[in-house]
Length: 299
Image (cartoon, rainbow, N blue to C red; front, side, top):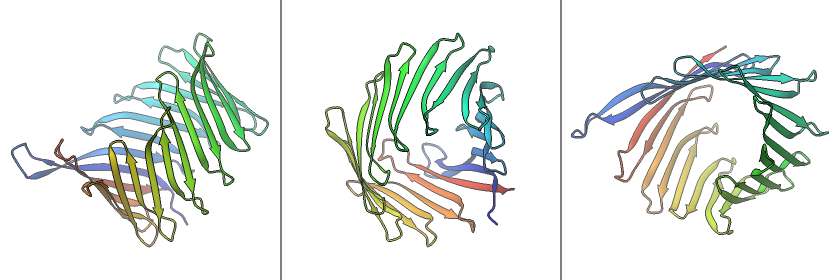
């Protein structure tokens, strides 16, 4: 019988210099993240800790009949910062999302669907009952091919288009933020098994600015990535155990100098229990060396 995770506690142990005049390392351990799940595997609480090990943010989720009904964002003092509630149709389809504020006012996000049950539009109405934003979605079969966001005055703020191959893998994504001016086009190539072989990123002038090439072993596990951009070339290698768990990962620059590595260990349930992370900063700052530990509780 498969074990169901109830809680994951993640701690971080940093290896740091005792002082600037010492070469000796000391260990500093602090909580990093805590997640709790119900028996249906829904995330019901997540606690994020800051660098000092103090609570930074808490997220809580309430479900009923496998539907998310309420989401709470709390600060370090356990005070509610934001609250969301959700409304469903008799058929269990999400109809509205309410964003509640501390002053008692709320915004309303309404969902609209096409004849296939896919989200076709979202309209956000603010607490003054004025339109704040409209999102439009278009599909080709089940694939989302267009996503647009407009402000309350029908000005286009964001647009994204996607094209797919016969296996429903994306082969081109174009994304533009008209508020910030950011833009990119990304193209993808695949082998017959659907493994991504290469992607290329272009700017608005259609100049190639990034390229990544991927290699796999006979089991289909990603073993090597070559990334190249205007800053140089990075080479990442991965190694796996016989169960397909990623054990070792290292990244080198174009001069074959180590940039970073991650070593992972797993338990008998194939759950990661430790990740040892090292990052080299080339003398521009202290190298980073830390250990992430995972502790599990089960239902």
